[in-house]
Image 1 (cartoon, helix red, strand yellow):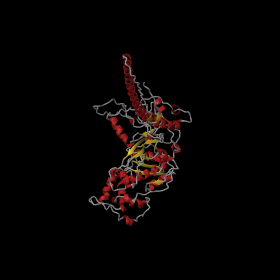
Image 2 (cartoon, helix red, strand yellow; image 1 turned 135 degrees about the vertical axis):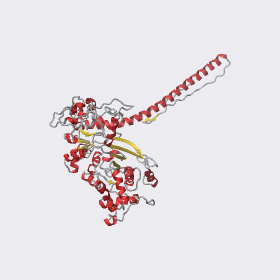
Image 3 (tube, rainbow, N blue to C red; image 1 turned 180 degrees about the vertical axis):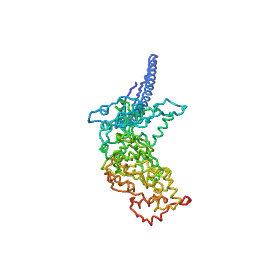
Image 4 (tube, rainbow, N blue to C red; image 1 turned 90 degrees about the horizontal axis):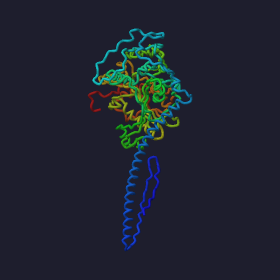
Length: 569
């Protein structure tokens, strides 16, 4: 006889299944008989049992196969759930930002009749009228072997004017906490968007030039619209009160990470091209010095933040493009908005005439680099005032940060900042490093190398460190930290427990924005390369924070860097 005992399958954990157990109890009783009939019956019974066992064996194989399929399906489901969870978080944030008023995006931002962009070059109805020379025929580029149909109009639109026929910018009220009342940032030149622009410039910062090159060479369709499927932020952040404060955030769009989802009704209903200016992702970070930190015992792998013995780190990254609210930027620098507009127009080679002709547009997307936030630990802790925060604000230095030049302390201080940020996160706090694209004190790498040449062909003394730069660039530093604290406000940071920076300019800019700094942490002396003593000692004398000695001018004259031909130091 065959008895089947089933143990019902059930899900024990999200990733664990129960097991189906089949016990086959085959009991046979042998009866001795001398009759042919009995023997035949026994043989028949045995044959049936064998056939039954074969059927059950096949059934068992089918069940095992089904179980394996279920396990694979469950693994896929778990991955899908994790992916969907981030979308749920984004949806929750979007609903929170959109909720409370019951006003849809299409009601908040008025529709505009369709208009061919070529008509924008015609005469204006407003007070200012564009001259006839504002439109000229566009030169034709030689055909590309892979050419696609171009969507460029036959006329070049040099500029636009307030009240011009067909110009109907989507309202943008900077500083409102409700993103739909505030309105989206619209800067695209798509056919149905160009008349609705409420910002000057272009997406991509300095990379907008490559975008133009792709269009000119017919490698990119001007009317291409991105598919933002699965591009939602990898983690949820905010909203914070600072997002609706037009004084605290003037250099980035606080809703830039959610733009395609917040303004979906406008994108679909009015065929307007709206793009994000912030992206949030998760990644691993591997830096050789961090493996040395683990070996030295300064960092300890925990499997969560510091993942292994090689010092591989788990990190959340935020990439941010600059979006300037011109009245707010002017106020930060203590100048008139008109003076700012004129300087931006004239000193970019007249690239953005709407800075002059469109005083009704208050937002400018400059062609400069942005910033990246590297968050170690739970991103939600950055904004928690009851949790300790270690933070470094770092300005780009490609020669040192990437290629290990020892003429400055940039890479060592960056590594120290990352290490200390990780330690703080492992202790239950939050660690953050913010990396700004301001190469060579925002003077650029060419100017920086010219300064290096002047230093190395001279005495390269700390007492002449800043003078070398001023002689070439006319200024010591053009990083202008006044706009830097905006990212801190956007992250919801309310105080900094350990500031991993010696810069007095960064310190003062942050404190002036109402964010207290409880402790300033200088780079350890043993991490300072010998050839960079010129830089660090000169900066300490000029006001950089230190817990050590501040040299006199005479003492600075004795601090001298390595010459090009010195191969022993």
